[in-house]
Length: 95
Image (tube, rainbow, N blue to C red):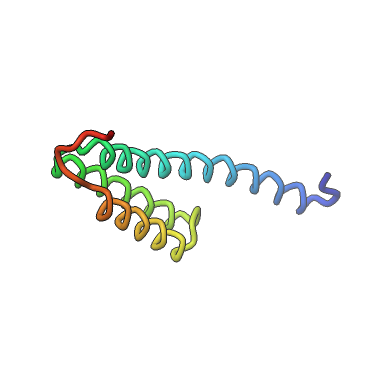
């Protein structure tokens, strides 16, 4: 338990940030999962590109809000694009 007035305030602020960061992080993960699911299902290229744009935008927004460090954001985008480039085969259903 915090003992000083300033420690109590820091605890309140940390809790607010934790809740806000959790929702941003969850949204970002959802956007990335939609891209991965689209790749696995072999959806049309235009739809996949729209999903990729949304996912990258979500990652960039999380970085700008301080949820992720900028290097982590870059790493997440890089890994996402590497996955797409390696596994995307248009018109194929997942086996």
